[in-house]
Length: 309
Image 1: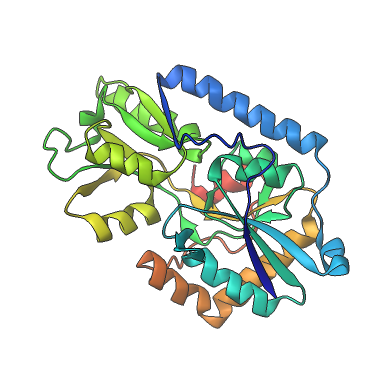
Image 2: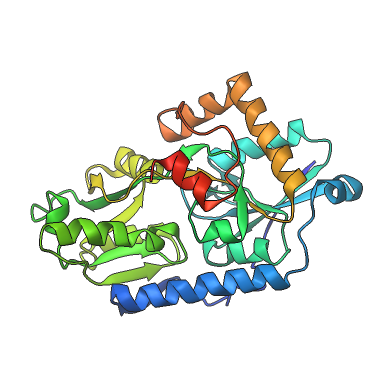
């Protein structure tokens, strides 16, 4: 049985404001990101423990958190969840001997809710990062998370990374995109430029709206959502060059749940060996990722080795 509910995690403020109206420099934003990471780590040290596999099997259900607004990984079609993750959860329901209880949350509180034990895993489109690996292990990746910039299709002022010098960029709050901005900063410094004002938003639809209306000069997102956006709205937006090195999208699992990590690793192997993973990647991402790691990512060293960093 697969149950679905919309929920707000205890750590989310519940504000009706959907995007940040505060424009910050990268340096103050970096400080805020580090504070958020510290809060996540503190939550992990104080959390009511998320269930490992034996407890899940004993109680008869797995509690998973998914995001509400990050196409093509997760999005809503009316009142129903849709996207790659929705199809994968159907496969997980058929594979598992226990119930899958899915709750749909805003991204800004999702990982904190998993880290403090409200949910057993984040079955969503989460990028792997050094900071998150302090709190979570990751099941084997299912998509690339290299970052690219997006501009307005009619904006002739941006044709290369050097043209991003001093311009205003939009990114999702609490995302790995923030922690990897130093890579773009280094690229800009090589051409004598600098990173401009960074604006944080709760969800990408609001970011794209502000890019379209000119409030933002460009946006950064990972490979799969960028391809999805250009396929659907190529008359409005255009994709640019990569602004980061390689990366991966995978499911965060609390570090105190090693047996659940093994179970989800075996499930991913089942999807891969049956050909179903490739089918779903092609349906939702427009391509399959045949060269992704097939083992869990449990440390920064493993992540860097897998990504060639």
